[in-house]
Image 1 (cartoon, rainbow, N blue to C red):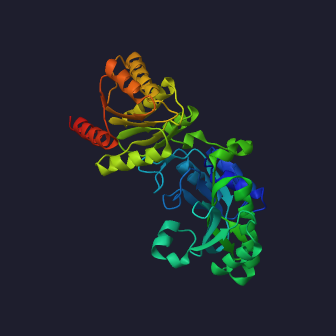
Image 2: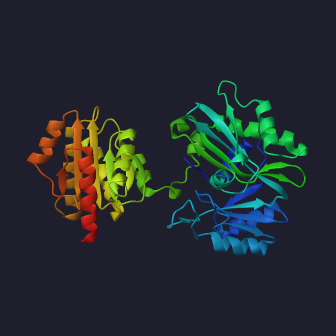
Image 3: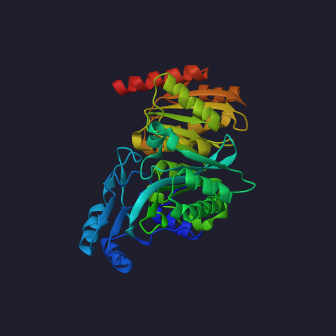
Length: 399
């Protein structure tokens, strides 16, 4: 789960992290009033969307008076902001952060993420702040510094101090920088974060260390412990299909292609995406129906995949264990029935290739053979099914 920058900074304040004073605004009038209350000589007007690269896309403005605050707020609210992370469709700006300006002397990058290979949290720092960390890693890998943190001990003061020296903080700021790192780590652990990213972390002309930007992501599995974080969720920033699937107990990720995938198990889902790409297809999604399903749940999965017309074909790739193949088959038939009731169409409107293996596979195949559904085709193998659906989608696009 992601939250907005202004929300992230409120969370960090709870842990004593130094962030600029600021207020959210949902209207132009609120933006101007917030700027008045802050009383800063320079006011920053920042678009609030769940994506990075806002500055380069024109989503961060520096205002020197209230008239400029009003003008920038008018410009940004309702604007579709397109960044390297939003994709070509962009995201609509529905809220702003009105923040006091900072007297920046130097910018740095700092983040905390979990490293699965070591089962530790890793602190990543760079003296090249304000830039895309991926670009820094590619062009100047020697400027990426890492500290691995033992979960039984936490971030030790000597590690934070070592990181501060390696990032070339000037001596006057070393103690403040290392203290900030420890506070950020405490926030990372305390709120079950999957990522804490500060870009930039700045040192001001007055030698203060401030988190000028903040991005917090949270482990969904830990949200039950943090109802205060759940309340910060902005569903308007989420993909409608992903939100729909989440509410139905399904795992769905939109991948942008036109061959939809329905599988059981994350490993099989990734293998299915790979094999579709191998045979020239463009996966539309990652959809895992989980280990235990019902015909109604399978039918809902079909509705989600077909919604909006993105999918030009569907590959159902099931290896039945707890999830039984006959339940999947019944779900496909139920999906066809629901579509018929809603649209008057016979069958499913796009080609569906079904590969079934595992528990009750013969019964599942029998169900789809005895009572066939229009546009549903059986495949004996995963490879054959992937090739078949890619071919059928290509033919459908030509027609």
